[in-house]
Figure 1 (cartoon, each protein chain N blue to C red):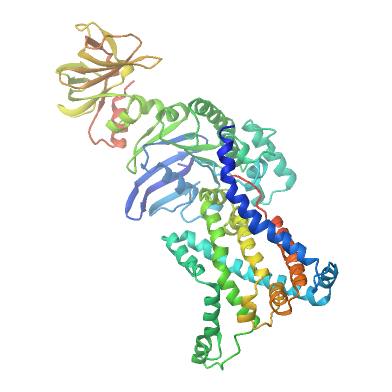
Figure 2 (cartoon, rainbow over the protein chains, first blue to last red):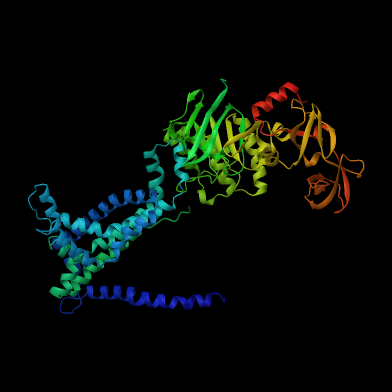
Length: 267
Length: 362
């Protein structure tokens, strides 16, 4: 009993934090989602959400988030694997993490410069005699920059999972007749799956509600749910509709969290 | 020659610039229990990894059934390993761990089921198929690892200090079980350990290694009774080693006295080392013994007293005796002629064997 008392006191800051910054906002979002633009109670926001306009936005949010996550994974997995093989892997990892300390907007503006008509990317292409192209405000630039921003968050959990893996298991697999490819399929992938899931979580969920990049890099050609929320709150002042979209985003995140939940298994 | 399942010919191994194995040659016969014994860093695990294919020899040739094994990838070798940390796959349950090798070979499901069941029963783990690895105790994991190796019916099973993580009681138990297992399966076992008691208890043949070289090979009794040099004598069991001079065949001088012994074939007046096992020493009255010593300390070991004495020249004599003595007393030590074992300096195993054959110690 004595041991329990101080434990409860230490819980207080956490509970207060959660109440103010997690529970209260969600309740408020829910509340606003039932109000129309004049502040009257209504369900019309939810009806509106299922119109083609918003369904299309939802689809494109998921589509782009999926592409971003996929490319992140395709690049991050081999990178993380290579990192574990390097001599000073901690240092290399540090260098990969370093850009995440720089503000996202700064990085976005930097890419506007690089991808612009007279930017470094086009100058580089001209060396090979290729005419300047429209790079900025395309799907390519949007996904490229998003992948660039998210990739450290994908590498980290995969790297940790690979690091945690007992290297003797690879010997054991080879010993039992598995080629390198089979070892990868049957041992390395299953044992790093939890890391991959964590990576997918931290990339896919924020990617769903990207909005600054959609404007700065994709030039509002890509309209995701994040953009829509921003527009409703700041431009059309339809807080109710914005909140409704947020409710669906929160639901989507909850589902993704549940699907990618790590099953408990010891090492 | 044809019986040799594994043959090493002048195999050397460097890691970076460090010499781990120094031109090692030996043969391993089918169906026996071999032990590679030596202190850590002697190269015993490297030999195992060379056979398994986890590492390649820098120099020399390794043959498997008279076919060159160098360069054959690990997954194509007909050997299986039981690892020190078991290396069981944590994402698979007991059944799938044991079935791993069979699944890789695309064996039919019904056959897998029958073989896994049999293998698990062999190691007394029938009914544990659905357990997760983390639910198993150390001894049980050990058995799963063995089952995972034997289920593939390899020609050789390599065991890399598999008992070192177990507590003493369980370790002794597993020693019996492994020995029985090897005899009933008839598969060649190559067992790596630094525990000399384990090696003596389980093996048909022991290779004693030190600093990348095989010091001596032979049956446990050969190695215990006729160690070739100071290292082997010291490493296997307890021993008393004093300097002596071989006066002529069957006559040796040490402790300023002449003793009859059973060794021969040395040069007259050659400097040698004399080794006598502590359990071959018998405590008597000071004047009745062959060596006079003073008791320095005494430890009760359960089965016997371990008595540490010094002779007049300051050499230490360790005695195992069921009789208790008083510390500080002067006692005599008696031993039979055949308890004296003469060791030459820098004698190779080949020369040693030749000498023994020529003079046939009985």
